[in-house]
Length: 236
Ligand code: UDP
Image 1: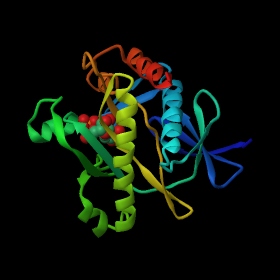
Image 2: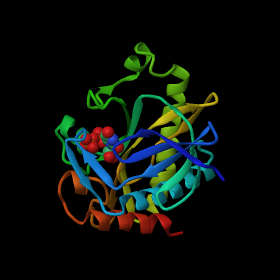
Image 3: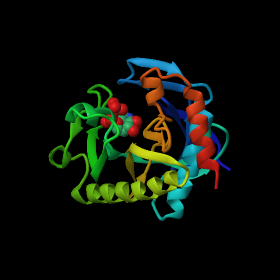
């Protein structure tokens, strides 16, 4: 058992608390949702509970598949115990199908399957609105070493294969997603969360959006979409 300590950091969707173990933190999932660099704000009812459960299941799945993550265990409805990370300020986006900012950038319709998996990097900075960067920027600004970057990309691609298959078996298309990594005792671990907040998930049959795009684009039935994902993710 760990004891919850003081608040370390409060983000848009989660709060991190210290514990009596300096290497462990409690990650608390909130119902608040933001989009467009926090210009749009709202609440998705019970999102924190659903995202905690979805994340715990998916981190567990990744651990079973030998991906090193910060996840230790689910503690309660909205809390999970995680290893403390020194977060690398590079968001890694993996894409299987054209959507969102890639559709805009390339002047394409959403839904076009990519011939090859695309990996993109964004500089994690709320002030700057997470600008897109490349491996040269990462090196020039010392955001991560070449070795760390290589490991992040390899892991991101492995995570993609594991999650793509898992969701496919549940009739969901994994369109794209964002990952964050951090350092912990000399290792690179997958951090943050894996939830419909940071993944695009489409119903395989109807192509209905089951993710935060319902909030971003005011499509309605947001809670129902997250619930559908939760149900599918928890089914064996
Ligand atoms: N994403 C995220 N946080 C961000 C930006 C993107 O979780 O700050 C996720 C997003 O949910 C999607 C993927 O990364 O699954 C690719 O997002 P995209 O670049 O298309 O940006 P968006 O259209 O969300 O602005």
